[in-house]
Length: 224
Image (cartoon, rainbow, N blue to C red; front, side, top):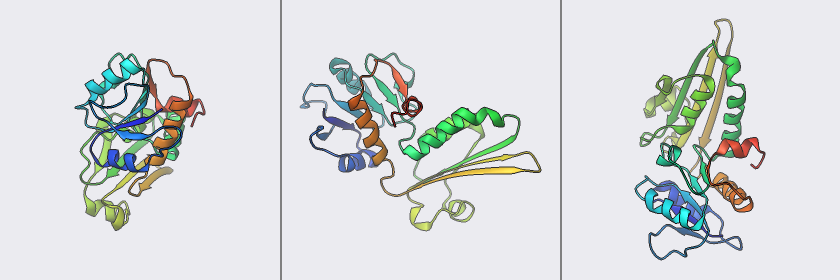
């Protein structure tokens, strides 16, 4: 079963170079014309402008779609094919987020601060931080987003060599006498490709229903 990568940005280019091709199927870029009309695994890492055509392809071939973009129209529309919503694809991060989803309610009533930091060029919705906020009972407006390299280097201790590509999240919970701080740090040029490869392997192996799946459902089912 071939893997089709949709998008022209950095993440899409990384996935085209890093996802394994072989006996399981080739990894190819999306093209509106010329692709074999056959069941595939489609990985959407684009801006959304091709989403209508991609959705039509998935519906006609019953291809599952792995959605990596946050704020996708697929989050709210009726779908006739499997859609897997992935606000994050680093497996360790996903398992940390799953832990927050299960236990976040234990910390309601305490002072909770949530900080996220990404490279200055990131302008899209910080999907991981939004998911963490929901688990902790916070609104997206309460998330502190840092894009200033000076603050990242000084306060958050992001190494200089990773200022141009990083994902940092901090949860600080306090009751006056006690504080608990949880931090996550993801560095590197292609920190998500390995996770996408695992997700694609699971999608290939399992019959999925024509509905939306949160990637957390895969974690809860121990598929990842």
